[in-house]
Length: 624
Image (cartoon, rainbow, N blue to C red; front, side, top):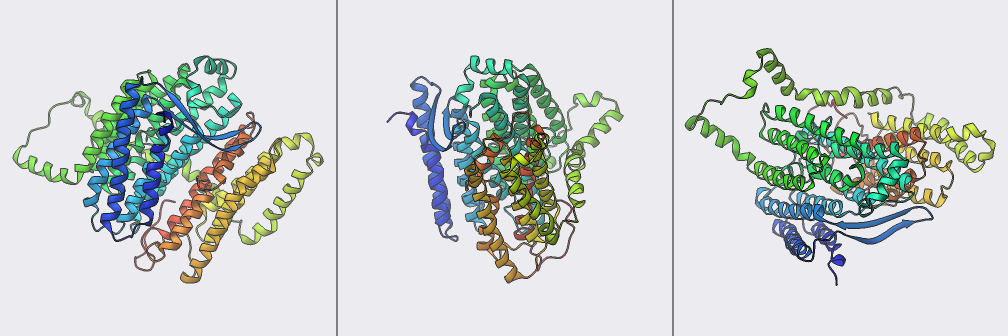
């Protein structure tokens, strides 16, 4: 047995650990924490031995082709793994830090109501982290990327009976969703650039990359820009920096391991992994340097005026990741890896001791007080000092700008669609869908110029429906059905493009319709028990109906294309059939996928999370 064949074991160990933790009794803390501890001990020891053996045998980069999930004439969805020094560093750091935090959490969360839920989610997160760092192509990376996103949502909203953690969890998930679509668009464009699903190992072939980029320079820049968008969203770089301090609403151990050390550095990992692709694109490298430098300067200022210890650490980490982005863009790969490891260990330590740091500072203030040393800011004019201070105190209005220029326009558009209700849906959209299905079978009836515009028109109909679902504040059923219909309209729109096999459509819609039906039946059962439920406020029903909440969460994941149904592969297939000149269609479908994920998670959060509507007083719900 060679070292190459053992690589998938680093995926199977967390999978087995996660599945075992699911079946353990809820009240047995020793078994629950023991399962997590044993899983991470095995993973850490195995990773150390594996990396040591890899170094001693020459430290050669190798790729492992594990399994083909779907294949046709011009498309392959394949699980690939790659091992090089980037993987080695991320694997070791991740295993060691997760092991340490698992030990810390065994006593820190003692007698916490969500003890089992925390360790379940932690192991699930580490599974996503392992898949991401070992991935050998964008498709495999996207599997882990999605797991990281949903596990982060669950950990931030760990105290799900409170309003603020749930609100911030939805906010963070919304930023992650933007990063998801950036990655999907990068996969779409790279498929057209290469004519296949390219692997990271192939990207190391400089001649192959250079030849393609010379002939398709615009597509190359577009792919790089989408990769940078995903990396910036995941690593909290501008303009997405405001989400990281909000993620600190979860338990301190999860804040330490995920948002201080591992998850927040995945954007840097994506840049490191794709560096051979954009290495010779000077404009992209300059953009990354500028983004990293601007983020570092702004985040450093914000960190220095924070009143919360966790927020101060979060912005300090953002500033360091900005420097890591600069190092990657300048080609200092080894320095960036060393910087990642150092920053990850430091932030984990700082966050773990953060509950005690306030008492330390109070003691030092009384017994070891020292006047503040003069800094370079003291030489600035007073007006400039005060302006910078106020801007940093307001976090440069980053959160406000996101709402003002992105989310509020989306909500405004959705609110203009209040004419859509169940009755009009039956009278107009369903007959229109039937007409579209007929025209798909009889495309010769359409003039040639209309054939090109038809996919965009039908995709736009789907976008209208998901807009309405995203802003729906009354009927839960209607919001759920609108998301399902959005997927159906997208499938219909792409069906007008040639070479789109209807079997692929069945693969895509099978997961959507099954998840949609399960979710609908679950809601029906909940309505029979609780009566009328609206989306105008948080209902907090997860504590009273935990089994229903779990089933509905799985249905939500299926409806968003999470890798538990064929719809996950179907979404990638959808994009593979959008032509490289159909940017309008790609943009509409991408926006639909952003909004359907947000709409579904919003439904789940409103129905099952937050303060229980029967035991808590009314309060304002401003966001989402």
